[in-house]
Image (tube, rainbow, N blue to C red):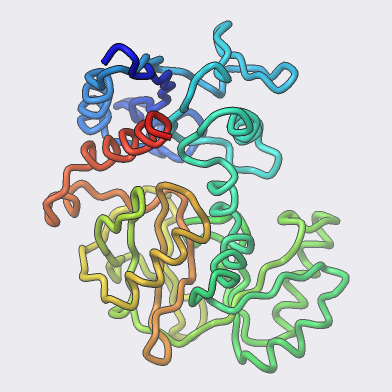
Length: 332
């Protein structure tokens, strides 16, 4: 028994925004779990046997020296595993992600930062799913100087949506049903910024669909927690009755739990394996009788009332993920 390896585990699961702070939880350094769940999970982690727990490691308050990450004079590379679940700077070249990716070259980091970054980029995640044989929306990536090629694509598709590659909450998602509209939007952006803010434009094929057939899923550690769909109150019009899900205040909510059909389950788990992030979600629509993934969510829909409806404890689910990763190292 004394020969059991004592695993060194680092934890960064900070508490959420508290009363009196900004209502938005979507900026760097803020915990993603509700306080009761966060506290329960931290208590469970502290009870894990034969591990050396290093709590409250703020990897954002760190520096990197010769490939080693230091926070408060502690070298995180000396850990066996580092688990994080909090907001980070999601922009291209983010220091937060550079810290995690540097650390992941030496130790196990969960959530996998490379996979997390793929999930952030809608083009990269669509491409990963497509290459894994998944059913995902047709997508074109193009540079401003090659805009003219999109005239042919739009004639073939009939309509498309222009999406920010690292966007969210429906912001910036623009319905495009002619090359003239796309040309003028791209010209306006380039004329006012003299650049392409996303480095390249992402155009996604538009599919006729019904909100009644939308299915979103939340996945933790390879297991679908539940399905849900947004209510009509979250829809806004893009053009002549064409709608999108939109959350201008970035606060989430207004969802109902729903069944996850077998085909949706299969596509979601295939996409989960393709991207590789341990916690992720997908939005799917039905077109032509089959589900199509149209969005990936690195911080998937988290709804405690739906967890309760399906008989799951969110703290237990996060705990099982941590334990499974610890055991992989312990018994490797």
